[in-house]
Length: 403
Image (cartoon, rainbow, N blue to C red; front, side):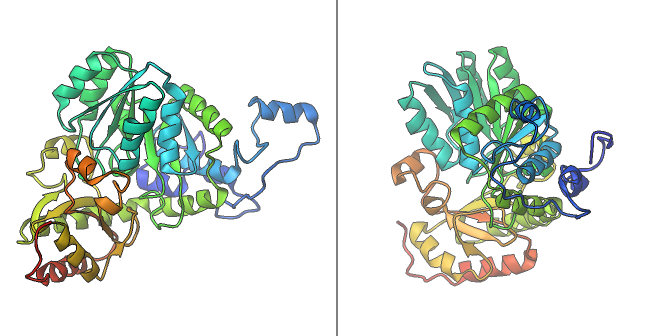
């Protein structure tokens, strides 16, 4: 795809073709992995023009790399952004983006139900820099609007949230943020650009942990930030100096994974709804969190701003943490691991995955019970996964007690 390619092509096609042709070499059908740290120039003046950004090219791997740039072009196309830049991890994308724009005395408004690492930035690191942080109840749009109208520099949203998959009305939040001139950042990791494009609602910056659904094979770390050219250039400058650079081999693996993103999400989303409906009816399950369920508090909003409801769900068990301990090892078709978005189903409690950095008291304050299980639906057959869950839940010891 180049500048002459029609813009009305579907996301599934973009996932395969976007950002690649320019970076192939010697007639290859795949983007090569360029491991070179530096790039040589015979003409000193041309070298300088490349170095200052007046000419296209690369000078040093911490700044740019052809394989990494191809990944950036693909995610840019999928999100419908003017520009994108990449990072070594998803947390690097979040921390670098925030650090680019926040200064001592600034104020950020967000919500309680962000990913645990993000929450630590809000609760621990930003206050140390004299940056004011206000966290609102997730889903309480009136409270968020009230706090934003007091004045803030950034409104930071995550929707759906990790791990309780709560939904926030993006369009409504953007409207109030623009009233006070605040930037709006959205972590779009759970939805992916296949299911949701926050920039369409006026969001300024979309952030991804590319490690998850984008890569899809649990073998490459990475992050991305997408938005208008001016914002992204500022973030890129911060990242290139501070050094949270994506590795070219990771970029290659992410490019490979993104080609099947549309297909993987289709299967995961369809299976996730079936699994959520099954779990709702099981006697060992206390509560199921999935926006595709009609009784989910954010269902109507999710219907409006998402194309599918996602491949992530979570549920709490009636008999507490001890039941979780007994249940998890009984699953045959699930990796018990601190990851999500892979072709294989992945499962784990928040206490060892999304919010391992938080204390039990902090998790409780965030509305995350110790009995909560996060379930990332892979591409396996839905009936096989349901049967696996059923046998694991139905064979728990009767001696299981609440903790």
